[in-house]
Image (cartoon, rainbow over all chains, first blue to last red):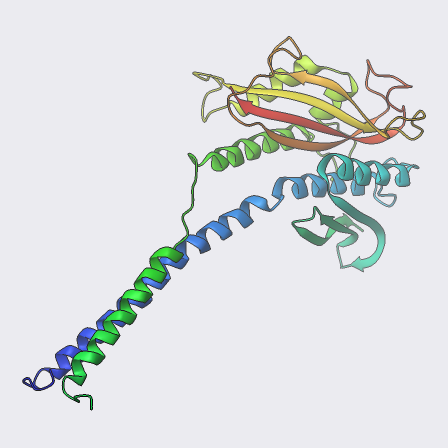
Length: 139
Length: 187
């Protein structure tokens, strides 16, 4: 364009801008694969079924250990042994560190229910997960 | 002295060079994901299927007065050591289709074991013990041949006392939590 006709400079500028735009799109495309891969891996790695299993077991234990409901449920005297069962089976067979506590005297309640508070800690080295939930009991 | 003509051409060439370099950088930096047949997705479905079946079997049919002592099928199977009943129930559940229980091909195989904890293990013995509970064919060990990788699904089960054919000293006779572990594969 030097020494040439100096018209049409806008066209050149626009062409350059379109080029830059295409490059930004290219960057988005190159990153999309990585984003999809890491997201799906994170979903696959999350031990959903194991945590659901643990939660369901704790709920049934919470019901069994409930001393205040009517009619009273059977109370199990060996709570510590059962806690060790779950903790050690999880450690040996699932490589997961598990801690839980079932507290029926949580002091949480409303007009209709008292609540047993259950806390759950799960760590398998990749995923660390904590959960607190309340198990209702008519008061 | 250098001629100062054609400076625009120089700039244009420079810009083009930069563009080509960036292009090469982007192309070479693109991640290639090698996914052999999306195997992990099928694995995840099988894992979910088995886990759901176990969860269903571990749920009591009724729950009288919110709280109750109704027992789940899974608990009964383990306490009475009914591996055959477990197999029928489990296979029936995981091959069930909408509206019908029949299935064209049942290619799902499994092998189930029960893991338990001993309060006072013998010397040089692990705290955790196990026994074979059930598998998809009558012969307990011979069919463990798989063309596809197996997935593992587990379920904690509370039992009251030792299972029928595994009394003390094998399994403690206390109320305890055992781990039912099922290996599932298509083959």
